[in-house]
Length: 91
Image (tube, rainbow, N blue to C red; front, side, top):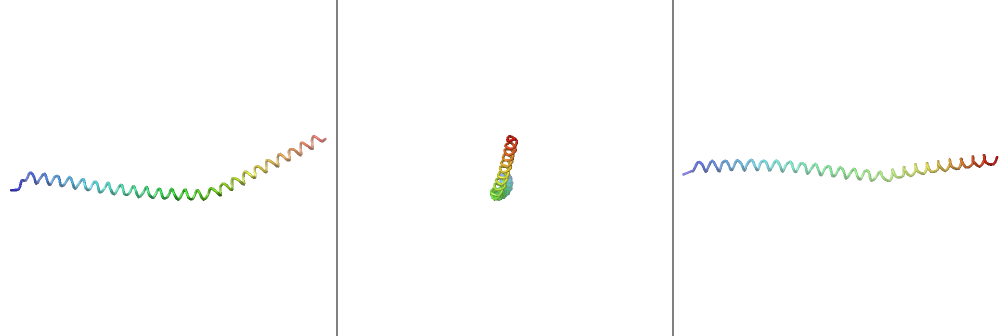
């Protein structure tokens, strides 16, 4: 003889397990999606770092040219100032 209460309990438990399995599948899919997104972001960041690393020598060269220009400009101003001062002091 089949116990209908037991059948109902087993059916109810089976439904709970199906819901739990579905929830775990959805959680797994979400975690996989987040992992994929994180990997893509990491790859993008690595590419950006490489791009910036390539720019550093160029930017450093530009900075050195500007510093050199400013140094020469200051030297010229200083030299001109000395010449004017020397000229004025001789008179």
